[in-house]
Length: 127
Image (tube, rainbow, N blue to C red):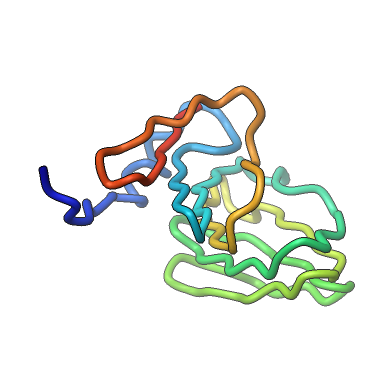
């Protein structure tokens, strides 16, 4: 059995999203990665996360990431690091905005998802 990595087409998952929120995720012993997709005007509500720094990577469309009151536009292929302890939010500014959140492992963003343990020990989940 092989532990080779598998490439995931995040763009296709983002454009095929039938509902907002988490579309795909990967959890290892060290990292969490979650693809989230939002329609215009929706996103992640303003909150403070004291647990982890979060790297946000634009996958499809455009959005705005607001960190401690500073609004930063984010498009496909762009990234921003959001430090832990900062006040943050994400809002879609185009009809659809998909972004990948990557951070040190912690609890999942979606309640009710069932992880699928892979042969290499990693977990993938789908809503």
